[in-house]
Amino acid sequence: MPKIKVALIGVGNCASSFIQGIQYYSKPDTSQLGLRNPVLAGYTPKDIEVVAAFDVDIRKVGLDLSEAIFAKPNNAPKVCDVPNLGVKVSKGPLLDGIGESTQALVEVSNASDVNIAETLIASHAEVAINLLPSGASNATRFYAMQAIAAGCAFINATPNFIASDPMIAQQFEDADLPLVGDDLVDQIGSTGLHKTLLKLLSDSGVRISETYQLDVGGGTESVDTMSRTRDTKRSIKTEAVASSLSYKTKVVAGSTDYVDFLQNKRDSYFWISGTYFCNAPLKIDLKFQTVDAPNAGSVLFDVVRAIKVAISRKQKGALNTVCAYGFKRPPKMLTMENIEAEFSKFVA
Ligand SMILES: NC(=O)c1ccc[n+]([C@@H]2O[C@H](COP(=O)([O-])OP(=O)(O)OC[C@H]3O[C@@H](n4cnc5c(N)ncnc54)[C@H](O)[C@@H]3O)[C@@H](O)[C@H]2O)c1
Image 1 (tube, helix red, strand yellow):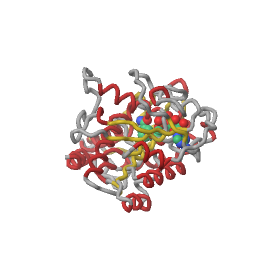
Image 2 (cartoon, helix red, strand yellow):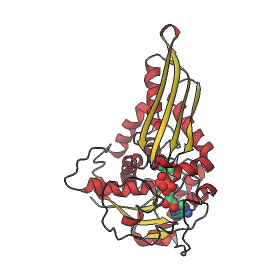
Image 3 (spheres, helix red, strand yellow):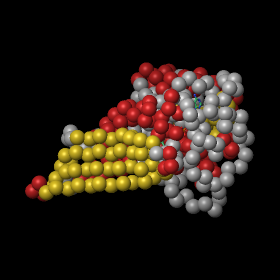
Image 4 (cartoon, rainbow, N blue to C red):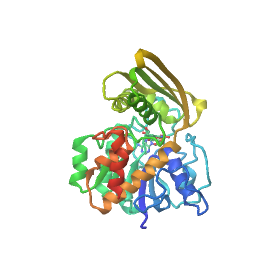
Protein backbone atom coordinates (compact mmCIF):
# COMPACT_ATOMS: atom_id res chain seq x y z
CA MET A 1 0.00 0.00 0.00
CA PRO A 2 1.22 3.57 -0.55
CA LYS A 3 2.13 5.38 2.67
CA ILE A 4 -0.43 7.77 4.18
CA LYS A 5 1.60 10.91 4.80
CA VAL A 6 0.36 12.87 7.81
CA ALA A 7 1.36 16.08 9.58
CA LEU A 8 0.78 16.55 13.32
CA ILE A 9 -0.33 19.94 14.62
CA GLY A 10 0.66 19.82 18.29
CA VAL A 11 3.17 17.30 19.64
CA GLY A 12 1.45 16.65 22.98
CA ASN A 13 0.26 13.46 24.63
CA CYS A 14 -2.03 12.31 21.80
CA ALA A 15 0.77 12.76 19.27
CA SER A 16 3.09 10.75 21.55
CA SER A 17 0.68 7.80 21.70
CA PHE A 18 -0.06 8.03 17.99
CA ILE A 19 3.63 7.85 17.03
CA GLN A 20 4.44 5.16 19.59
CA GLY A 21 1.41 3.22 18.33
CA ILE A 22 2.72 3.25 14.75
CA GLN A 23 6.03 1.79 16.02
CA TYR A 24 4.36 -0.66 18.38
CA TYR A 25 2.02 -2.13 15.77
CA SER A 26 4.60 -2.10 12.97
CA LYS A 27 6.95 -4.66 14.56
CA PRO A 28 6.56 -7.92 12.66
CA ASP A 29 6.18 -10.05 15.82
CA THR A 30 3.68 -7.77 17.61
CA SER A 31 0.10 -8.92 18.00
CA GLN A 32 -2.53 -6.51 16.72
CA LEU A 33 -4.50 -6.80 19.98
CA GLY A 34 -5.82 -3.43 21.14
CA LEU A 35 -6.73 -2.20 17.68
CA ARG A 36 -10.34 -1.91 16.63
CA ASN A 37 -9.37 -2.45 12.99
CA PRO A 38 -5.91 -3.99 12.43
CA VAL A 39 -6.50 -3.65 8.68
CA LEU A 40 -8.81 -1.02 7.25
CA ALA A 41 -9.38 -0.62 3.51
CA GLY A 42 -6.17 -2.64 3.07
CA TYR A 43 -4.09 -0.26 5.22
CA THR A 44 -2.35 -1.21 8.49
CA PRO A 45 -0.88 1.25 11.03
CA LYS A 46 2.51 0.59 9.41
CA ASP A 47 1.23 2.40 6.31
CA ILE A 48 0.92 5.68 8.25
CA GLU A 49 3.98 7.94 8.03
CA VAL A 50 4.39 11.18 9.95
CA VAL A 51 6.18 13.63 7.64
CA ALA A 52 5.79 16.97 9.46
CA ALA A 53 5.00 18.26 12.95
CA PHE A 54 4.38 21.65 14.55
CA ASP A 55 4.58 22.81 18.16
CA VAL A 56 5.50 25.92 20.17
CA ASP A 57 7.23 24.47 23.25
CA ILE A 58 10.98 25.13 23.47
CA ARG A 59 11.48 21.55 24.77
CA LYS A 60 10.02 20.15 21.51
CA VAL A 61 10.74 22.63 18.69
CA GLY A 62 13.81 21.65 16.64
CA LEU A 63 13.96 18.11 18.06
CA ASP A 64 13.38 14.97 16.05
CA LEU A 65 9.82 13.75 16.69
CA SER A 66 11.19 10.57 18.29
CA GLU A 67 12.58 12.72 21.15
CA ALA A 68 10.00 15.52 21.18
CA ILE A 69 7.14 13.13 22.03
CA PHE A 70 8.85 12.27 25.35
CA ALA A 71 9.65 15.89 26.29
CA LYS A 72 7.84 17.59 29.17
CA PRO A 73 5.08 18.48 29.86
CA ASN A 74 4.01 15.33 27.97
CA ASN A 75 3.23 12.53 30.40
CA ALA A 76 1.70 9.86 28.15
CA PRO A 77 3.29 6.52 29.07
CA LYS A 78 6.30 5.28 27.13
CA VAL A 79 5.44 1.89 25.67
CA CYS A 80 8.27 1.50 23.15
CA ASP A 81 11.45 3.10 21.88
CA VAL A 82 10.98 5.21 18.77
CA PRO A 83 13.94 5.38 16.35
CA ASN A 84 14.98 8.68 14.80
CA LEU A 85 12.18 9.57 12.37
CA GLY A 86 14.03 12.24 10.42
CA VAL A 87 11.21 14.72 11.10
CA LYS A 88 12.05 17.85 13.09
CA VAL A 89 9.33 19.66 15.03
CA SER A 90 8.75 23.06 13.38
CA LYS A 91 7.74 26.16 15.31
CA GLY A 92 4.15 27.15 14.54
CA PRO A 93 2.55 30.51 15.38
CA LEU A 94 1.32 30.59 18.98
CA LEU A 95 -1.99 32.48 18.46
CA ASP A 96 -4.29 31.30 21.30
CA GLY A 97 -2.46 27.96 21.67
CA ILE A 98 -1.67 28.55 25.33
CA GLY A 99 -4.25 29.72 27.86
CA GLU A 100 -3.59 31.57 31.11
CA SER A 101 -3.78 28.40 33.14
CA THR A 102 -1.32 26.43 30.97
CA GLN A 103 1.28 29.23 30.77
CA ALA A 104 3.10 27.69 33.71
CA LEU A 105 3.22 24.28 32.01
CA VAL A 106 4.24 25.20 28.43
CA GLU A 107 7.52 27.06 27.72
CA VAL A 108 7.05 28.96 24.48
CA SER A 109 10.06 28.93 22.13
CA ASN A 110 11.25 32.25 20.70
CA ALA A 111 12.34 30.61 17.41
CA SER A 112 10.79 32.15 14.28
CA ASP A 113 7.53 30.69 13.03
CA VAL A 114 7.74 28.61 9.88
CA ASN A 115 5.31 29.12 7.02
CA ILE A 116 2.84 26.33 7.75
CA ALA A 117 1.41 25.87 4.24
CA GLU A 118 4.89 25.86 2.67
CA THR A 119 6.16 23.35 5.24
CA LEU A 120 3.17 21.08 4.62
CA ILE A 121 3.72 21.23 0.86
CA ALA A 122 7.46 20.55 1.18
CA SER A 123 6.78 17.51 3.40
CA HIS A 124 4.25 16.05 0.92
CA ALA A 125 1.72 15.71 3.75
CA GLU A 126 -1.73 14.75 2.48
CA VAL A 127 -3.54 14.82 5.85
CA ALA A 128 -3.09 17.30 8.71
CA ILE A 129 -4.20 16.11 12.17
CA ASN A 130 -5.12 18.89 14.57
CA LEU A 131 -4.05 17.94 18.11
CA LEU A 132 -3.88 21.43 19.61
CA PRO A 133 -5.17 22.14 23.13
CA SER A 134 -8.95 22.30 23.22
CA GLY A 135 -9.04 26.04 23.94
CA ALA A 136 -6.99 26.91 20.85
CA SER A 137 -9.94 27.90 18.68
CA ASN A 138 -8.22 30.64 16.63
CA ALA A 139 -5.13 28.48 16.12
CA THR A 140 -7.35 25.57 15.03
CA ARG A 141 -9.04 27.74 12.39
CA PHE A 142 -5.68 29.11 11.28
CA TYR A 143 -4.23 25.61 10.78
CA ALA A 144 -7.41 24.48 8.97
CA MET A 145 -6.94 27.35 6.49
CA GLN A 146 -3.24 26.49 6.10
CA ALA A 147 -4.25 22.89 5.33
CA ILE A 148 -6.53 24.18 2.57
CA ALA A 149 -3.71 26.36 1.21
CA ALA A 150 -1.40 23.32 1.17
CA GLY A 151 -3.99 20.95 -0.35
CA CYS A 152 -4.19 18.76 2.78
CA ALA A 153 -7.21 16.93 4.15
CA PHE A 154 -7.94 17.90 7.77
CA ILE A 155 -8.76 15.88 10.90
CA ASN A 156 -9.94 17.99 13.82
CA ALA A 157 -9.52 16.03 17.06
CA THR A 158 -10.25 19.12 19.19
CA PRO A 159 -13.71 20.23 20.40
CA ASN A 160 -13.54 23.41 18.27
CA PHE A 161 -16.20 23.62 15.57
CA ILE A 162 -14.55 22.99 12.20
CA ALA A 163 -16.29 20.08 10.43
CA SER A 164 -19.55 21.07 12.12
CA ASP A 165 -19.19 24.68 10.95
CA PRO A 166 -20.97 24.71 7.56
CA MET A 167 -18.93 27.71 6.31
CA ILE A 168 -15.60 25.97 6.98
CA ALA A 169 -16.89 22.65 5.60
CA GLN A 170 -17.87 24.54 2.43
CA GLN A 171 -14.33 25.95 2.14
CA PHE A 172 -12.92 22.41 2.18
CA GLU A 173 -15.55 21.34 -0.35
CA ASP A 174 -14.61 24.26 -2.64
CA ALA A 175 -10.95 23.24 -2.35
CA ASP A 176 -11.81 19.59 -3.23
CA LEU A 177 -10.50 18.39 0.15
CA PRO A 178 -12.04 16.06 2.74
CA LEU A 179 -12.54 17.16 6.34
CA VAL A 180 -13.53 15.28 9.53
CA GLY A 181 -14.28 16.29 13.14
CA ASP A 182 -15.07 17.53 15.73
CA ASP A 183 -13.76 16.26 19.10
CA LEU A 184 -12.35 12.77 18.66
CA VAL A 185 -14.19 9.86 20.22
CA ASP A 186 -12.07 7.68 22.54
CA GLN A 187 -11.62 4.01 21.75
CA ILE A 188 -13.29 3.19 25.03
CA GLY A 189 -14.18 6.51 26.56
CA SER A 190 -16.60 7.71 29.16
CA THR A 191 -19.06 9.13 26.59
CA GLY A 192 -19.23 5.82 24.68
CA LEU A 193 -19.57 3.79 27.87
CA HIS A 194 -22.24 6.12 29.22
CA LYS A 195 -24.26 5.95 25.99
CA THR A 196 -23.97 2.16 25.90
CA LEU A 197 -25.09 1.79 29.54
CA LEU A 198 -28.06 4.08 28.99
CA LYS A 199 -29.06 2.27 25.81
CA LEU A 200 -28.76 -1.14 27.47
CA LEU A 201 -30.92 0.01 30.37
CA SER A 202 -33.51 1.68 28.12
CA ASP A 203 -33.69 -1.34 25.81
CA SER A 204 -34.38 -3.41 28.93
CA GLY A 205 -37.33 -1.21 29.87
CA VAL A 206 -35.60 0.89 32.53
CA ARG A 207 -36.75 4.51 32.68
CA ILE A 208 -33.76 6.74 33.45
CA SER A 209 -34.71 9.63 35.72
CA GLU A 210 -31.28 11.27 36.06
CA THR A 211 -27.67 10.61 35.14
CA TYR A 212 -24.33 12.34 35.22
CA GLN A 213 -20.78 11.50 34.21
CA LEU A 214 -17.79 13.58 35.31
CA ASP A 215 -14.08 13.22 34.55
CA VAL A 216 -10.91 14.09 36.45
CA GLY A 217 -7.59 14.03 34.56
CA GLY A 218 -3.90 14.79 35.02
CA GLY A 219 -2.70 15.90 31.54
CA THR A 220 -2.09 19.49 30.37
CA GLU A 221 -5.27 19.11 28.36
CA SER A 222 -7.33 18.74 31.57
CA VAL A 223 -6.05 22.13 32.74
CA ASP A 224 -6.92 23.70 29.40
CA THR A 225 -10.39 22.12 29.38
CA MET A 226 -11.11 23.37 32.90
CA SER A 227 -10.20 26.93 32.16
CA ARG A 228 -11.15 27.44 28.52
CA THR A 229 -13.54 24.83 27.16
CA ARG A 230 -15.39 23.43 30.15
CA ASP A 231 -18.77 24.71 28.88
CA THR A 232 -18.25 23.65 25.25
CA LYS A 233 -17.00 20.23 26.35
CA ARG A 234 -19.97 19.86 28.69
CA SER A 235 -22.47 20.71 25.98
CA ILE A 236 -20.80 18.39 23.39
CA LYS A 237 -20.66 15.47 25.83
CA THR A 238 -24.13 16.05 27.26
CA GLU A 239 -25.65 16.29 23.78
CA ALA A 240 -23.85 13.09 22.69
CA VAL A 241 -25.01 11.15 25.77
CA ALA A 242 -28.59 12.44 25.57
CA SER A 243 -28.74 11.27 21.93
CA SER A 244 -28.65 7.63 23.14
CA LEU A 245 -32.09 8.00 24.77
CA SER A 246 -35.34 8.33 22.86
CA TYR A 247 -36.84 10.62 25.53
CA LYS A 248 -35.71 13.72 27.43
CA THR A 249 -34.37 13.29 30.95
CA LYS A 250 -31.86 14.94 33.28
CA VAL A 251 -28.40 14.37 31.74
CA VAL A 252 -25.11 16.06 32.58
CA ALA A 253 -21.71 14.98 31.20
CA GLY A 254 -18.45 16.88 31.33
CA SER A 255 -15.02 17.38 32.84
CA THR A 256 -14.60 18.58 36.39
CA ASP A 257 -11.02 18.91 37.55
CA TYR A 258 -7.28 18.48 37.22
CA VAL A 259 -5.27 16.31 39.60
CA ASP A 260 -1.59 16.46 38.63
CA PHE A 261 -0.52 13.17 40.20
CA LEU A 262 -2.96 11.27 38.02
CA GLN A 263 -0.46 12.00 35.22
CA ASN A 264 -2.03 10.90 31.93
CA LYS A 265 -4.72 8.84 33.69
CA ARG A 266 -8.38 9.80 33.64
CA ASP A 267 -10.92 8.88 36.32
CA SER A 268 -14.50 8.90 35.08
CA TYR A 269 -17.43 8.80 37.52
CA PHE A 270 -20.90 7.65 36.45
CA TRP A 271 -24.18 8.02 38.28
CA ILE A 272 -27.42 6.63 36.86
CA SER A 273 -30.78 6.52 38.59
CA GLY A 274 -33.98 5.03 37.19
CA THR A 275 -36.88 2.69 37.73
CA TYR A 276 -38.00 -0.61 36.22
CA PHE A 277 -40.77 -3.20 36.85
CA CYS A 278 -43.54 -1.79 39.12
CA ASN A 279 -41.44 1.32 39.73
CA ALA A 280 -38.63 -0.62 41.46
CA PRO A 281 -35.56 1.66 41.89
CA LEU A 282 -32.20 1.10 40.15
CA LYS A 283 -28.95 2.95 40.86
CA ILE A 284 -25.51 2.67 39.25
CA ASP A 285 -22.50 4.36 40.87
CA LEU A 286 -19.37 3.53 38.90
CA LYS A 287 -15.73 4.58 38.55
CA PHE A 288 -13.83 3.86 35.35
CA GLN A 289 -10.09 4.53 34.95
CA THR A 290 -8.25 4.83 31.63
CA VAL A 291 -5.01 6.30 30.31
CA ASP A 292 -5.96 9.27 28.19
CA ALA A 293 -3.59 9.50 25.23
CA PRO A 294 -3.61 5.80 24.17
CA ASN A 295 -7.40 6.07 24.13
CA ALA A 296 -7.14 8.30 21.05
CA GLY A 297 -4.77 6.05 19.07
CA SER A 298 -7.01 3.36 17.60
CA VAL A 299 -9.76 5.75 16.47
CA LEU A 300 -7.16 8.13 14.98
CA PHE A 301 -5.66 5.22 13.02
CA ASP A 302 -9.15 4.40 11.67
CA VAL A 303 -9.95 8.00 10.80
CA VAL A 304 -6.60 8.56 9.05
CA ARG A 305 -7.14 5.46 6.92
CA ALA A 306 -10.76 6.40 6.17
CA ILE A 307 -9.76 9.91 5.06
CA LYS A 308 -7.10 8.35 2.80
CA VAL A 309 -9.89 6.31 1.20
CA ALA A 310 -11.85 9.54 0.68
CA ILE A 311 -8.80 11.24 -0.88
CA SER A 312 -8.36 8.41 -3.36
CA ARG A 313 -12.07 8.59 -4.21
CA LYS A 314 -11.80 12.37 -4.59
CA GLN A 315 -14.48 12.94 -1.95
CA LYS A 316 -14.60 16.44 -0.53
CA GLY A 317 -16.13 18.51 2.28
CA ALA A 318 -17.19 17.07 5.66
CA LEU A 319 -17.39 13.27 5.49
CA ASN A 320 -20.55 12.73 7.54
CA THR A 321 -20.13 8.98 8.10
CA VAL A 322 -16.49 9.22 9.20
CA CYS A 323 -17.38 12.20 11.42
CA ALA A 324 -20.20 10.25 13.10
CA TYR A 325 -17.92 7.21 13.60
CA GLY A 326 -14.89 9.00 15.02
CA PHE A 327 -16.12 12.21 16.67
CA LYS A 328 -18.37 13.32 19.50
CA ARG A 329 -19.64 16.40 17.65
CA PRO A 330 -20.16 15.37 14.02
CA PRO A 331 -22.12 17.58 11.62
CA LYS A 332 -24.76 14.80 11.63
CA MET A 333 -25.19 12.35 14.51
CA LEU A 334 -25.97 8.72 13.56
CA THR A 335 -27.68 6.27 15.92
CA MET A 336 -25.34 3.89 17.73
CA GLU A 337 -26.73 0.84 15.90
CA ASN A 338 -26.06 2.39 12.49
CA ILE A 339 -22.59 3.86 12.98
CA GLU A 340 -20.50 0.68 12.66
CA ALA A 341 -22.41 -0.58 9.61
CA GLU A 342 -22.33 2.81 7.87
CA PHE A 343 -18.60 3.18 8.52
CA SER A 344 -17.87 -0.33 7.16
CA LYS A 345 -19.91 0.54 4.07
CA PHE A 346 -17.92 3.78 3.66
CA VAL A 347 -14.51 2.10 3.72
CA ALA A 348 -15.56 -1.03 1.81
N1 LIG B 1 -8.00 10.62 24.37
C1 LIG B 1 -7.56 11.84 24.09
O1 LIG B 1 -6.45 12.19 24.48
C2 LIG B 1 -8.42 12.79 23.31
C3 LIG B 1 -9.72 12.43 22.94
C4 LIG B 1 -10.51 13.35 22.25
C5 LIG B 1 -10.01 14.59 21.89
N2 LIG B 1 -8.72 14.92 22.24
C6 LIG B 1 -8.23 16.25 21.87
O2 LIG B 1 -6.94 16.18 21.28
C7 LIG B 1 -6.24 17.41 21.53
C8 LIG B 1 -4.83 17.10 22.00
O3 LIG B 1 -4.85 16.47 23.26
P1 LIG B 1 -3.46 16.21 24.05
O4 LIG B 1 -3.80 15.47 25.29
O5 LIG B 1 -2.44 15.68 23.14
O6 LIG B 1 -3.07 17.72 24.45
P2 LIG B 1 -1.65 18.27 24.93
O7 LIG B 1 -1.90 19.49 25.73
O8 LIG B 1 -0.84 17.17 25.53
O9 LIG B 1 -0.93 18.69 23.53
C9 LIG B 1 -1.16 19.90 22.85
C10 LIG B 1 0.14 20.31 22.16
O10 LIG B 1 -0.12 21.45 21.33
C11 LIG B 1 0.99 22.33 21.45
N3 LIG B 1 0.59 23.67 21.01
C12 LIG B 1 -0.06 24.66 21.69
N4 LIG B 1 -0.27 25.73 20.89
C13 LIG B 1 0.25 25.44 19.68
C14 LIG B 1 0.32 26.14 18.43
N5 LIG B 1 -0.19 27.37 18.30
N6 LIG B 1 0.92 25.53 17.38
C15 LIG B 1 1.46 24.28 17.50
N7 LIG B 1 1.40 23.56 18.66
C16 LIG B 1 0.81 24.13 19.74
C17 LIG B 1 1.39 22.23 22.91
O11 LIG B 1 2.69 22.70 23.16
C18 LIG B 1 1.24 20.71 23.13
O12 LIG B 1 2.44 20.05 22.80
C19 LIG B 1 -7.09 18.18 22.55
O13 LIG B 1 -7.81 19.21 21.93
C20 LIG B 1 -8.05 17.13 23.09
O14 LIG B 1 -9.29 17.68 23.50
C21 LIG B 1 -7.94 14.05 22.93
